[in-house]
Image (cartoon, rainbow, N blue to C red; front, side):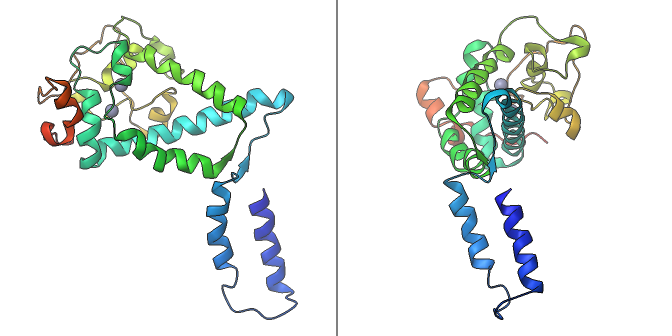
Length: 229
Ligand SMILES: [Zn+2]
Ligand SMILES: [Zn+2]
């Protein structure tokens, strides 16, 4: 909102300037604004009173979209796939696979999508706490259970829907990236709607998997994993 007002004011100044200023005089300030905003947030999500629920829904959708985008990059960039393939190397996917992510990925996310979220949104601790609780949902789609949402697949991620993402079968590669909301897969055409009894085997098509904890810690260099085409 503030940014929109400043841009409008700059447009007015340009038509009726008090003093002549060099072209691009405000460019430095606008560039610095991005850094300044990182300490405050460009979009003020009002979460007081009755606005709490809508603010939370907006925040959760925006964050899940950032997660979706990051996940697609993880499958596309070889250096990131070398790490993310650790998550995919589990041939026996179950609830404990939820936290099976390569250790360096947390830092990369903190410096990319979470930094961006910090720049974009000014939120309060209630929203962040609620989003943290919603994040516990990720355990469910990794569960080794025969549960899918059938024709309502687009509402929420499910064990069947996410199992397709972990599938060893080529027809399922680079499908069903969504974390919470499969609607993003639908929007960007990366969805595979599971058939009624479709529960494919999981793991990497190379058959590679870490044998020891040391293998896990050094996975990107040991796996020699390649992105799936
Ligand atoms: Zn993945
Ligand atoms: Zn997963």
